[in-house]
Length: 210
Image (cartoon, rainbow, N blue to C red; front, side, top):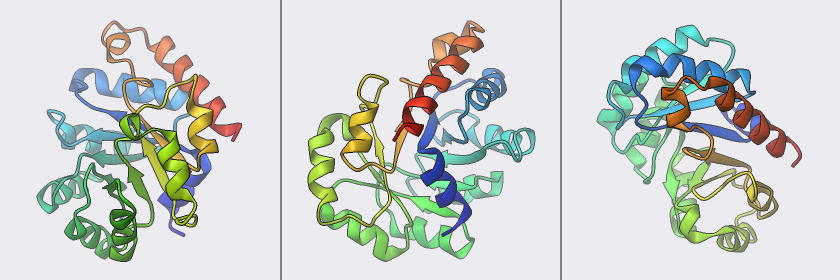
């Protein structure tokens, strides 16, 4: 088992930062880490994503793993890896991206929905998959596919919040991807970083109960 997968299975939360402005990124990352978050991704459709990933890698080295999200093709994978991304997450299954990551020892966690896509992703070399969009599919769907596909690490992304996060783990999620429910960009922009940190702490506590 590689280091990123170990980290994922231990800490169970990936913080997703989409649309964050460069000037706020470091403060937001610090608040999340202080709240206990250990895996953070900046989506590649965020302006200046590569520069922020590069900076986070040096600034938060040893404190949190820094990855890239919305890595929909190999060109974006190349850009993310050049910036220092330690893992790649996507909303889609692109086998070329998985191969690119594997060749370089970088974990790729592709977005999948159907059992066919899940198995195809694992056969292509993904060591975990992102079940997406969970907000629409619901935890009942996760529970159903978990029966026959019980040995594949799954990150449930979409729809998880503090009141229902326990249901995600009970349905079989190994980890959850959390965007705006965890990272309130309005708080970040207003400098209310203690609220960001406290929110992170609440999520981390909820995840560790499972």
